[in-house]
Length: 454
Image (cartoon, rainbow, N blue to C red):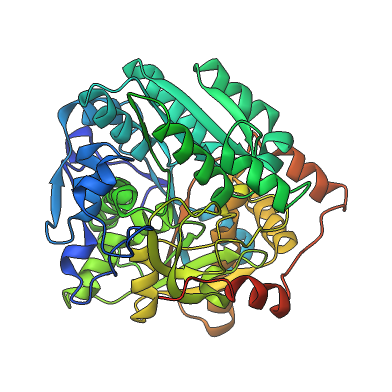
C-alpha cells in the first residue's frame, strides 16, 4: 500500500460525472410521499407546483441508479471540487490511538459547507426552467448562504426564511446571504399566514426548520415565477450530495484503504445521506460491509427516540407527508446551537436504511460535542461547525475504543463545514454558559400523539 499523505486530492478529471441514486439498489424502497389533501402518492404534477419540474422528476425516480451531472454544474463544481480527504494524523497522535482517522472536508468553499453541492444544482434547474427566483429555509445558515451564492451566479432572486434563533445568534451568516443579494427573514415571521399562525400557537418561539419550511413554501406558491427549494431531507438533495461519498470512495481506493466505519452528523439527512449512499450501495449489492453511523443531537433525536411513521415535513402542514423517523411536525426543538440539525424528522432514504439495519444511530449532548470540536480544532487546525462536530465526537469515541482494544480500524467521518460564523456558540462554551437539553418522554409523547392517522 502506498504511503498515505495528509491530504488525498483527486485530480479534476476524477471528479464524478454522475450523481448516485441509492434507492435504485434498495429492494425495499422508501415509502412514497403523500399529497396532504388526498393522502395519495404525490404525482409529478403535484410536485411541479412547488418544485422545479426536473427536480420533481429526480425526487420521484427510485429506479435510475445514476444521473448525469450537467456540464454547467460540473463547471461550477470545479471551483472547489474535488474536495480533499484528510488523514487526521495529528488527532491520531493526540489520542494515541492505533485507529486511522480520515475526514472528508466540505468547508473549502465560500459558503463554508457541503450545501453548495445541491444549491448550485437546484439554482441551475430553476434558471433552466425560466423562473424568476426561489424561496427556501435555512437553519444554521449554511444552506441559505450556499443558495444565495448559487442564485447570484445564475441571476435568480433568492428569499430565505432563517430559523429565528440562528438569525439572532449568527448575524454575520445572515449578512453573507444579504451580500450575495438574498432577502433574509427570521422565522416564524408575521409576513406569511402560516408564520402568523405558528406565532399565535407558540408565542415567543425561537423557531425550527419545520416552521421555516412552511413559510418558504407559502411564499413560493403565492408568487408567480417562483419555486421552493430545500437544502436537506428530500431525495433529490441526497442525490446531489452523493458527490461527497463518491469522491470519498475514489480517494480511499486510490490508496488502497478499506473503511471500517463511516460517520456523519444527522439533521435532515443531506450530508449523511450524501456521504454514505455509495457505501450503502455496496452493502445493498453485497459487495462490501461497513459500519455506518448517524450522529444526532440529544435535543432533537429523531432516529434514536422518534417513531417511523408518516408525518408532515413542515410545522404548518402544507408540504407532502413523508414516512420517516420523526418527533412530530409540531415538535419545536430547544434553541440548540447546532441549528442545522434542528429538524423534527429524517430523510425517507436515511430512515429506510436505518429501519433495515444498514445504519446505526447515536445521540450526543452539545457540551460533549463542543469539547470534541475544541480538541479537534487545537490539533487539526480547522474550527469545525457545531453540526460537523457531532460526527467528530463519535469518531473520537471510536478511536479511543480502538486504543482500548488495540484494533487499527479505519474511521471516516464527514467534516461538513467550518464554524467561523458560530462564534456565539463557541463563546457560550468557552465561558462555561452552555447547557444541555434533552426532551422528556412526556414532551415527545405529546408531539408524537399528534401524528396523522395513516
